Length: 235
Image (cartoon, rainbow, N blue to C red; front, side):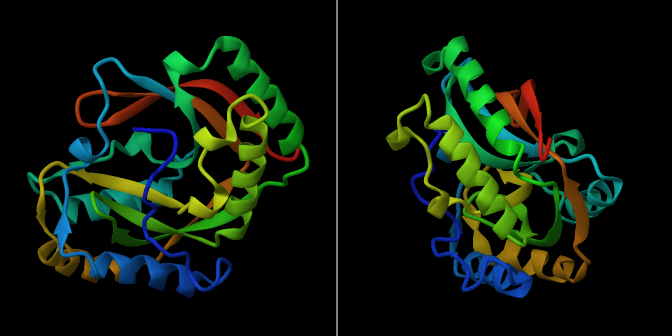
């Protein structure tokens, strides 16, 4: 996985980042337009032993775990690798591969982020309903406004020591929470048909009070991480 996504999904931003139905409708319309889905692990190639640094939101809310569990069980099949329930996350921003970021740079980025995030208050998000992308099943996340602001702050902190050309632009950020990765190419129509009834499940509300700087790795066909810093919002 590279720090800068080349093709965001959905390709276009919603007509409103504050209107939940606009965001959810845009996510679903983009997924429904797909004809062919791809193997996530081939699309997002990593070399053996590769790790990278990312800004993450992580979630262990019981209501979200329950929603993810239900959707994973309904869509259990060989072509999908479920995200571990203790691994639910929202990727905010990639910093870089571990072999390109020094400990000093990581420390400087963390200090810069900690200073800037004191002025960013905690906020809430609604997660759901279920949708998908080219290679994954994922929940829509609404609204985007606080997340876009948070992304901008983290990008500013990160580019204080990393080249801005290597760090994803906020305009390319598409917030989502993944619950499954496709492990084989497949036609989109069947999965879209199976996901649609699950979209009637109500979204859940979670609170965001901190961000994590993690060192991400692959364990088999899942992502796992080690926390390198936990930075509170608004303090």
